[in-house]
Image (cartoon, rainbow, N blue to C red; front, side, top):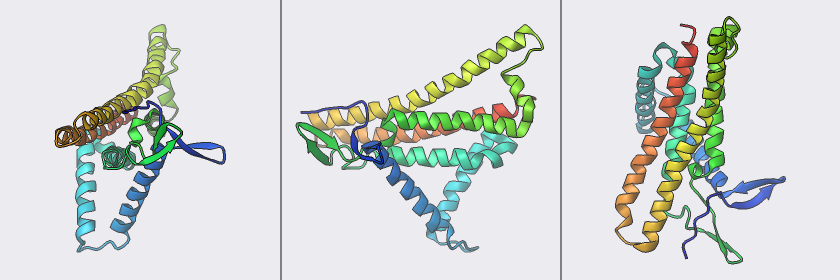
Amino acid sequence: MLRISLPAETLWTLWGLPISNALLTTWIVMAVLIVCSIVATRKLSMKPGTFQTLAEIVVGGLYDFFGSISGSFIGQFFPLVGSLFLYILLANWIGLLPGVGTVGFWHGEEFIPLFRGAMSDLNTTIALAVVSVLAMQYYGFKNLGHHYAKRYINFKDPILFSVGILEIISDLSKIISFAFRLFGNIFAGEVLLAVMAFLMPFIVPLPFLFMELFVGLIQALVFSMLSAAFFTIAVAHEE
């Protein structure tokens, strides 16, 4: 019988910390990105090989793309927004691989998948949202110094003070917006695929699988693009 769990299932505990199937998938995504980074950069050459060429195309394309959003600030933002994009994209696509959500073990009468899409766990998306919002504050103070604090606390007149309160609420709401947008889209896609595979396991789920590949790309773009845009707004706030 088809069973869909909203929270990620706990596989075991490590030093008292619960290790979920979504966290296990996250570690796999991190390992893949780290290995690819090492392989692409360990023997850099003016005449690059196939893997270095592919890495330069991907990184260069992303740099130009985000540069159209952040302008002269792209040098500061790119390491983070580029990493966010690649991490979210790979996590979304790995979550669609055969075995993710279907390979596992039985605990009593409950089936526990060994792997689960990382972005289908709200804890993961909230963590990414917090990182993005905190990074926005970091870049703001780094570029504008103590003047950046006037965005939130300004006693010059009641209007500016009220605007500062609204800015605080706006930044806090970004965490909710970032987290639930990414989680909702990815989790809904995985539920759709699970239902289609349960009802009609052959051929029919394929169009939905390709659609989810596209959705995974779009969600990675949306999250990283919005982050880049918010970073740019933060550093240009004084202007």
